[in-house]
Image 1 (cartoon, helix red, strand yellow):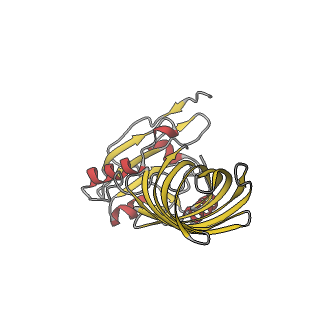
Image 2 (cartoon, chains in turn yellow, brown):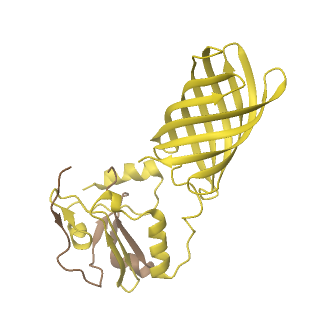
Image 3 (cartoon, chains in turn brown, cyan):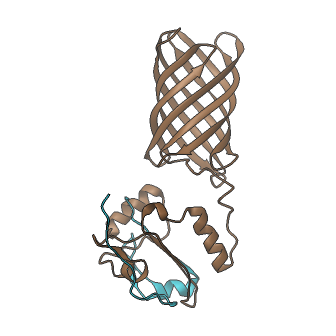
Length: 228
Length: 49
Protein backbone atom coordinates (compact mmCIF):
# COMPACT_ATOMS: atom_id res chain seq x y z
CA UNK A 1 0.00 0.00 0.00
CA UNK A 2 1.16 3.51 -0.76
CA UNK A 3 2.55 5.73 1.99
CA UNK A 4 1.51 9.41 2.38
CA UNK A 5 4.88 10.30 0.80
CA UNK A 6 4.05 8.22 -2.32
CA UNK A 7 0.63 9.87 -2.45
CA UNK A 8 2.19 13.32 -2.22
CA UNK A 9 4.37 12.66 -5.28
CA UNK A 10 1.37 11.19 -7.15
CA UNK A 11 -0.85 14.16 -6.25
CA UNK A 12 1.82 16.61 -7.37
CA UNK A 13 2.34 14.78 -10.68
CA UNK A 14 -1.36 14.79 -11.55
CA UNK A 15 -2.46 18.01 -9.88
CA UNK A 16 -4.82 16.22 -7.47
CA UNK A 17 -6.34 18.44 -4.77
CA UNK A 18 -8.71 16.02 -3.00
CA UNK A 19 -7.35 13.88 -0.12
CA UNK A 20 -5.37 10.77 -1.13
CA UNK A 21 -5.59 8.52 1.92
CA UNK A 22 -2.85 6.04 2.75
CA UNK A 23 -4.32 2.73 3.94
CA UNK A 24 -0.93 1.43 4.98
CA UNK A 25 -2.06 -1.72 6.79
CA UNK A 26 -4.89 -2.39 4.32
CA UNK A 27 -7.56 -2.51 7.05
CA UNK A 28 -9.93 -0.07 5.35
CA UNK A 29 -9.44 -1.76 1.97
CA UNK A 30 -10.34 -5.10 3.55
CA UNK A 31 -13.47 -3.62 5.13
CA UNK A 32 -14.71 -1.84 2.01
CA UNK A 33 -13.39 -3.41 -1.16
CA UNK A 34 -11.35 -6.52 -0.38
CA UNK A 35 -7.76 -7.42 -1.12
CA UNK A 36 -5.91 -9.95 -3.26
CA UNK A 37 -3.74 -12.74 -1.80
CA UNK A 38 -0.65 -10.61 -2.42
CA UNK A 39 -2.27 -7.95 -0.21
CA UNK A 40 -3.12 -5.38 -2.87
CA UNK A 41 -6.40 -3.51 -2.56
CA UNK A 42 -9.04 -4.31 -5.14
CA UNK A 43 -10.19 -1.27 -7.07
CA UNK A 44 -13.59 -0.16 -5.89
CA UNK A 45 -15.92 2.73 -5.29
CA UNK A 46 -18.21 3.38 -2.33
CA UNK A 47 -20.60 6.33 -2.18
CA UNK A 48 -21.67 7.30 1.37
CA UNK A 49 -24.52 9.64 2.27
CA UNK A 50 -23.99 12.18 5.07
CA UNK A 51 -25.98 9.91 7.45
CA UNK A 52 -23.35 7.18 6.96
CA UNK A 53 -25.58 5.02 4.77
CA UNK A 54 -23.82 3.36 1.82
CA UNK A 55 -25.89 4.01 -1.31
CA UNK A 56 -23.55 2.60 -3.96
CA UNK A 57 -20.77 0.05 -3.94
CA UNK A 58 -18.79 -1.35 -6.83
CA UNK A 59 -15.75 -3.62 -6.55
CA UNK A 60 -13.70 -4.54 -9.61
CA UNK A 61 -11.82 -7.84 -9.72
CA UNK A 62 -9.28 -6.36 -12.14
CA UNK A 63 -8.18 -2.92 -13.24
CA UNK A 64 -10.00 -3.28 -16.57
CA UNK A 65 -13.28 -3.58 -14.66
CA UNK A 66 -12.87 -0.23 -12.97
CA UNK A 67 -15.63 2.28 -13.49
CA UNK A 68 -14.79 4.93 -16.06
CA UNK A 69 -14.85 8.54 -14.89
CA UNK A 70 -18.13 9.00 -16.78
CA UNK A 71 -19.71 5.97 -15.04
CA UNK A 72 -18.54 7.19 -11.63
CA UNK A 73 -19.96 10.68 -12.26
CA UNK A 74 -23.23 9.11 -13.41
CA UNK A 75 -23.36 6.96 -10.24
CA UNK A 76 -22.76 10.01 -8.06
CA UNK A 77 -25.51 11.93 -9.85
CA UNK A 78 -27.92 9.02 -9.55
CA UNK A 79 -27.32 8.17 -5.91
CA UNK A 80 -26.73 11.62 -4.47
CA UNK A 81 -29.24 13.43 -6.67
CA UNK A 82 -26.66 15.85 -8.03
CA UNK A 83 -26.25 17.08 -11.58
CA UNK A 84 -22.70 16.90 -12.84
CA UNK A 85 -21.07 17.49 -16.19
CA UNK A 86 -22.13 15.18 -19.01
CA UNK A 87 -18.76 13.47 -19.16
CA UNK A 88 -19.83 11.05 -21.90
CA UNK A 89 -20.46 13.75 -24.45
CA UNK A 90 -17.86 16.40 -23.72
CA UNK A 91 -14.12 16.31 -23.71
CA UNK A 92 -11.42 14.01 -24.94
CA UNK A 93 -11.03 10.53 -23.53
CA UNK A 94 -7.44 10.08 -24.65
CA UNK A 95 -6.04 13.59 -24.44
CA UNK A 96 -3.08 12.67 -22.24
CA UNK A 97 -3.06 8.87 -22.60
CA UNK A 98 -1.02 6.57 -24.82
CA UNK A 99 -2.78 6.95 -28.13
CA UNK A 100 -2.78 6.60 -31.88
CA UNK A 101 -3.77 9.80 -33.62
CA UNK A 102 -4.97 10.28 -37.19
CA UNK A 103 -4.97 13.76 -38.72
CA UNK A 104 -6.33 15.01 -42.02
CA UNK A 105 -6.76 18.57 -43.14
CA UNK A 106 -5.98 21.30 -45.55
CA UNK A 107 -5.13 24.96 -45.70
CA UNK A 108 -2.53 27.32 -47.03
CA UNK A 109 1.27 27.30 -47.01
CA UNK A 110 3.64 30.19 -47.74
CA UNK A 111 7.12 29.42 -49.06
CA UNK A 112 7.65 32.49 -51.20
CA UNK A 113 4.02 32.66 -52.26
CA UNK A 114 0.79 31.40 -50.74
CA UNK A 115 -0.64 28.20 -52.15
CA UNK A 116 -3.08 25.55 -51.11
CA UNK A 117 -2.03 22.41 -49.30
CA UNK A 118 -3.43 19.20 -47.91
CA UNK A 119 -1.82 17.14 -45.20
CA UNK A 120 -2.29 14.08 -43.09
CA UNK A 121 -0.43 12.22 -40.36
CA UNK A 122 -0.52 9.12 -38.21
CA UNK A 123 1.28 9.25 -34.90
CA UNK A 124 1.62 6.96 -31.90
CA UNK A 125 2.43 8.97 -28.79
CA UNK A 126 2.80 8.14 -25.12
CA UNK A 127 2.75 10.44 -22.08
CA UNK A 128 6.09 11.27 -20.42
CA UNK A 129 4.71 13.89 -18.06
CA UNK A 130 1.61 15.86 -17.30
CA UNK A 131 0.12 16.78 -20.71
CA UNK A 132 3.47 16.02 -22.42
CA UNK A 133 3.57 13.24 -25.02
CA UNK A 134 6.22 11.89 -27.36
CA UNK A 135 6.38 9.35 -30.17
CA UNK A 136 6.90 8.56 -33.85
CA UNK A 137 4.90 10.23 -36.60
CA UNK A 138 4.35 9.46 -40.26
CA UNK A 139 3.49 12.65 -42.14
CA UNK A 140 1.96 13.04 -45.57
CA UNK A 141 1.89 16.19 -47.67
CA UNK A 142 1.49 15.70 -51.45
CA UNK A 143 2.65 19.24 -52.30
CA UNK A 144 6.17 18.81 -51.00
CA UNK A 145 7.17 15.28 -50.05
CA UNK A 146 4.99 12.19 -50.19
CA UNK A 147 5.99 11.00 -46.75
CA UNK A 148 8.19 12.03 -43.87
CA UNK A 149 9.36 9.96 -40.93
CA UNK A 150 9.40 12.07 -37.81
CA UNK A 151 9.40 12.14 -34.07
CA UNK A 152 7.11 14.56 -32.29
CA UNK A 153 6.98 16.15 -28.87
CA UNK A 154 3.51 17.40 -27.95
CA UNK A 155 2.39 19.65 -25.10
CA UNK A 156 -1.39 19.65 -24.59
CA UNK A 157 -3.43 21.67 -22.14
CA UNK A 158 -7.15 21.02 -21.81
CA UNK A 159 -9.40 24.10 -22.02
CA UNK A 160 -13.10 24.58 -21.24
CA UNK A 161 -13.10 21.52 -18.93
CA UNK A 162 -11.44 19.32 -21.59
CA UNK A 163 -14.08 20.27 -24.18
CA UNK A 164 -11.11 21.61 -26.09
CA UNK A 165 -7.35 21.74 -25.93
CA UNK A 166 -4.39 23.90 -26.79
CA UNK A 167 -1.49 22.09 -28.38
CA UNK A 168 2.13 22.97 -29.05
CA UNK A 169 4.18 20.45 -31.05
CA UNK A 170 7.74 20.11 -32.27
CA UNK A 171 8.32 17.73 -35.17
CA UNK A 172 11.67 16.65 -36.57
CA UNK A 173 12.73 13.84 -38.86
CA UNK A 174 13.70 12.80 -42.34
CA UNK A 175 12.08 12.64 -45.75
CA UNK A 176 13.53 9.71 -47.71
CA UNK A 177 11.46 10.29 -50.86
CA UNK A 178 11.26 12.93 -53.62
CA UNK A 179 12.72 15.94 -51.84
CA UNK A 180 15.16 14.09 -49.60
CA UNK A 181 16.53 15.66 -46.47
CA UNK A 182 15.96 16.47 -42.86
CA UNK A 183 12.84 18.32 -41.81
CA UNK A 184 11.92 20.21 -38.69
CA UNK A 185 8.81 22.12 -37.76
CA UNK A 186 6.71 23.52 -34.98
CA UNK A 187 3.03 24.23 -34.68
CA UNK A 188 0.43 25.65 -32.35
CA UNK A 189 -3.17 24.57 -32.51
CA UNK A 190 -6.53 24.82 -30.85
CA UNK A 191 -8.84 21.80 -30.73
CA UNK A 192 -12.53 21.46 -30.13
CA UNK A 193 -13.87 18.05 -29.09
CA UNK A 194 -16.66 16.77 -31.32
CA UNK A 195 -16.77 13.55 -29.26
CA UNK A 196 -14.34 11.82 -26.86
CA UNK A 197 -12.41 10.54 -29.91
CA UNK A 198 -12.96 13.13 -32.68
CA UNK A 199 -11.87 16.74 -32.75
CA UNK A 200 -11.87 19.73 -35.03
CA UNK A 201 -8.53 21.54 -35.07
CA UNK A 202 -7.09 24.81 -36.31
CA UNK A 203 -3.31 24.90 -36.58
CA UNK A 204 -0.55 27.19 -37.64
CA UNK A 205 3.22 26.82 -37.67
CA UNK A 206 6.47 26.68 -39.55
CA UNK A 207 8.45 23.99 -41.29
CA UNK A 208 11.93 23.74 -42.71
CA UNK A 209 12.72 21.04 -45.21
CA UNK A 210 16.23 21.09 -46.61
CA UNK A 211 16.78 24.68 -47.72
CA UNK A 212 13.05 25.39 -47.98
CA UNK A 213 11.25 27.26 -45.23
CA UNK A 214 7.53 27.73 -45.03
CA UNK A 215 4.73 28.80 -42.74
CA UNK A 216 1.30 27.23 -42.82
CA UNK A 217 -2.23 27.47 -41.48
CA UNK A 218 -4.55 24.48 -41.70
CA UNK A 219 -7.92 23.26 -40.51
CA UNK A 220 -8.76 19.61 -40.14
CA UNK A 221 -10.08 16.76 -38.08
CA UNK A 222 -8.23 14.37 -35.79
CA UNK A 223 -9.19 11.05 -34.31
CA UNK A 224 -7.61 9.94 -31.02
CA UNK A 225 -7.69 6.26 -30.13
CA UNK A 226 -6.60 5.42 -26.62
CA UNK A 227 -4.36 2.36 -26.63
CA UNK A 228 -3.80 1.91 -22.92
CA UNK B 1 -1.21 -14.17 -15.95
CA UNK B 2 -1.23 -15.23 -12.31
CA UNK B 3 -4.59 -16.04 -10.78
CA UNK B 4 -4.84 -14.37 -7.41
CA UNK B 5 -7.09 -15.45 -4.63
CA UNK B 6 -9.41 -12.61 -3.81
CA UNK B 7 -10.67 -11.84 -0.33
CA UNK B 8 -13.82 -9.75 -0.33
CA UNK B 9 -15.29 -8.24 2.82
CA UNK B 10 -16.81 -10.88 5.09
CA UNK B 11 -19.94 -8.87 5.58
CA UNK B 12 -21.26 -6.03 3.48
CA UNK B 13 -23.14 -3.66 5.71
CA UNK B 14 -25.31 -0.73 4.77
CA UNK B 15 -23.50 1.55 7.17
CA UNK B 16 -20.00 2.79 6.38
CA UNK B 17 -17.32 1.49 8.75
CA UNK B 18 -15.53 4.34 10.58
CA UNK B 19 -11.89 5.04 9.79
CA UNK B 20 -9.13 7.62 10.11
CA UNK B 21 -6.30 7.62 7.58
CA UNK B 22 -3.49 10.04 6.78
CA UNK B 23 -3.75 12.11 3.60
CA UNK B 24 -0.88 13.09 1.30
CA UNK B 25 -0.14 16.17 3.45
CA UNK B 26 0.22 13.95 6.55
CA UNK B 27 -2.97 15.19 8.23
CA UNK B 28 -5.48 12.62 9.48
CA UNK B 29 -8.82 12.40 7.68
CA UNK B 30 -11.75 10.93 9.63
CA UNK B 31 -14.80 9.61 7.82
CA UNK B 32 -17.28 11.00 10.38
CA UNK B 33 -15.74 14.49 10.08
CA UNK B 34 -15.99 14.39 6.29
CA UNK B 35 -19.60 13.14 6.41
CA UNK B 36 -20.50 16.10 8.63
CA UNK B 37 -19.53 18.28 5.64
CA UNK B 38 -21.45 16.24 3.05
CA UNK B 39 -21.50 12.98 1.09
CA UNK B 40 -18.26 11.02 0.62
CA UNK B 41 -17.06 9.16 -2.46
CA UNK B 42 -14.42 6.61 -1.49
CA UNK B 43 -12.34 5.36 -4.42
CA UNK B 44 -9.84 2.53 -3.93
CA UNK B 45 -7.17 2.81 -6.56
CA UNK B 46 -3.56 1.85 -7.02
CA UNK B 47 -1.57 4.89 -7.99
CA UNK B 48 1.08 3.25 -10.18
CA UNK B 49 -0.85 0.38 -11.61
